[in-house]
Image (cartoon, rainbow, N blue to C red; front, side):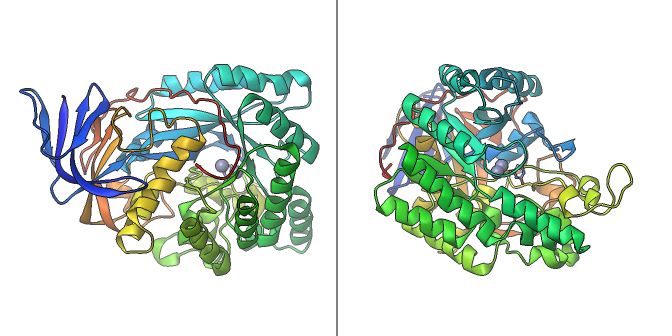
Length: 475
Ligand code: DUC
Ligand code: ZN
Ligand code: ZN
């Protein structure tokens, strides 16, 4: 064996137990009491520490062209930050262009990713941008052959689908064993509210929230679920943020439908209040929090926490999509010098390094169990996205994606001093975590030593997805 983690407490989605964990050639080769090292084995003292699976961030936008610019973190800096926060696999979004097949888009983005040299393992979802012809729809099959079985449609944005196209995408996905994710917001109501607010001279970030309020998201969640039921397809609602949506998912699941939902740490930690004044004492302006969908009110936040506990919410992911402060300023003055407004702020915030420490810290403080934190951050995403044959748990035969977690370590986010992305600020500034990863391994290779990134560009490899087989809500 190459590595032996001695004396730690292993946490899986189902159980917590004391055991040694052995790693051979990048995989977990044994779990048990009293494992003995070989002559050349590196022994890691894990006494007092937890041994957790690396998290899987099922939702990132690295180097993505959006809002008139490109998301600040590329495939290297973004995955480096992920690894330093205990995330060892990311699923990034490929946006299909109009007239471009999905497999061509996948190849185009994968070339960029490989050139950047990802720091941890990665895979993709295809952001559907054109299903207007049979050829475009059939290109989903080509992506499946290339190892990508997960797609996302947008019910909002001008490049998104209409309900008919969404329905056809769902039907096709059900036929070929793919999973469709959805960004659910009511485009027409969103546009009508934008028009109204701008006509009234209401231009600041608060109106970003009001034009994408709880009902704008909730109505689309309900409609998306109905479309999936009609199409006989599984559905994955990304970045679920509102009470109506949580309730609709819970009801559909209770009826036996394979409906799944993801939420993000920003909806669990912040509320819509950030769009009033930002957090001045942290020099965070309201526009720095502009992401889509925006943070919602406390009742929705409570519903999301409850959804995690009851299983209505299956996964946690970041929607990491960072933009520089000077780009956020386009909400005041646009690139071309014209007056800005809430629609001219690039949408998205950073979070890739904070997701796992945040949810584990909440577990450490007793809000949920550590098992639940592992389930929604690693085990469920691996199952949903067809990579549980190699990822998502501390289990013999799986990749040695291992986080050594010190529940006693106190950590405070400081973008300048202890974060590893490329952004010039973070909405997580000064967030305090109880417990923190002290070592992070990806396929047995140390990427984070508790202080610094110690990996190399290009360590990460592409992880192929299997077909998706969900017939009901169970995992
Ligand atoms: N929302 C964001 O905030 N950024 C990128 C894409 C999206 O849907
Ligand atoms: Zn989205
Ligand atoms: Zn997104």
